[in-house]
Length: 503
Image (cartoon, rainbow, N blue to C red):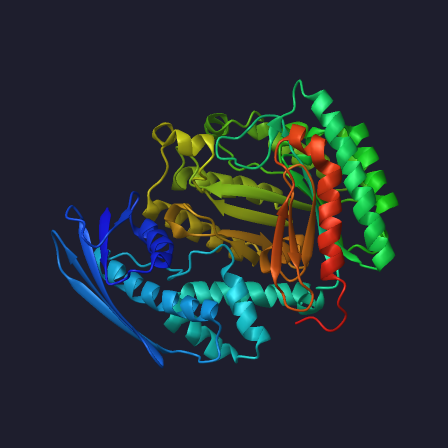
């Protein structure tokens, strides 16, 4: 769909307009005002004085013409950046409205295209805005539907029950440790993950660098008296390395990090069932780690083969029972809606198989076509369900979890996600992942250690976010981990230099 835009000369509008167009059309392109080959022409009239007033009129080569208008007060004390954000949201408001009216499609998340919608409601509540007013603002200003506002509130209520001090944890940190190896690379994956076979030299070098990072960061945390809230081992698949290597890694954690016994939660992703062995489970048990993920993604064998996962459905079930028998008391499992060749029948089967196991938490992802993935590069090879069926599958997941006592406790969204939906983490009461809450709501610094690990530094006073990423490939990481560690420590020094109460 080619869309010609009139009346908005500022190029800063181009990206938000493109992102919203992508919600409606599989292929869309924003054209200049003088384009003669456009399928849609949308004319804007934008006035910015004491108020922001904006009108949009849509005309098509075929079909009806529609229009919308919107007004909102402009805060005179806002910075230039905040002013433009308000103006951009107002333009997005009428743009989304005319596209919804013209297509007949309702975007349940309104004009929001970001990853973390619940942050928006958290912010309003922290500012002391009454609940009813906050909900009305989300609906009026962002066009979010009542259904999604209810979901946001349900999640926030659960998060604050699990972490009552969520808003006052900025002087603590969490740690993410990235292990960049997997048995094979999945077709939908863009994480730093390398097939481990034949890479023992890379693994050894990587682990040497990771131990160094853990020692140096741990030393700094001890010296400054900074506590750790959670530790999360991700990847890749952290259980791809040997039991002996895992043992040494957790020993390093206990030696290097401050007050490990007081850390609220330590999680290890064991996502690929083909990496789980009795020896590795013994190591986890030895170091008092009982929260793991075992991720089936689907219980249809043909699907697993199509997406490049070499384990079998039977193996997933067997390894789950093995982990249970060996003392793993908090197991998460992931399912993905919209995998190639899957519809409601296959997803219903996956839910039925999940019911036989009843893990403590279930994360329901909606497939996202990530730009660098094998699946995106070969879309014609991977046929997926249409929007209506994807929505039906998400609704069935919501109903199933509610019927079985699971509550939603975090969500995030991605670009190019099927049906413009979301990924939702559900859990049985008091089994929620605190790390998932911290990473999504951005209430504290998360230090990333290891290959491809991203750090997110949250200023304790202002909340300003600084991003910092380690190299994604093992060779680059091995060549530079010392420099990257020093750079992170330098950022931490600046963050925690000022004393006072967090914002």
